[in-house]
Image (cartoon, rainbow, N blue to C red; front, side, top):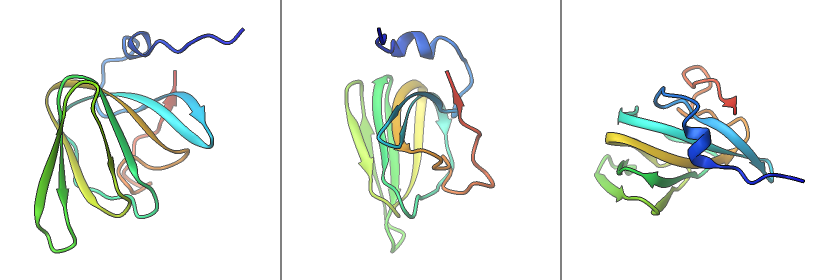
Length: 122
């Protein structure tokens, strides 16, 4: 019988930040957990949206429009936000925050394969 995926248990298996871990596949998408703290880099995904669901902690997603104007979305536990494809964004967490992220398999987390971390499966 298939077993349910325990997200807290999966998150307990690693300590590093900004390194998504694949926990499931969903219609050609990677379902991942990640621990974040501090500021990531500004980036965009030209062909895909970016899905963030906060499990615990707080996440600020800084956004920059085509004219360079900035805004932000602040998420707490149980809240999610989808960054539309092509929108430049920068996730920031002042405290360690745990997330579920979903994206098409093979999507680089920085938007650029040359600078992206290698995703591992738990």
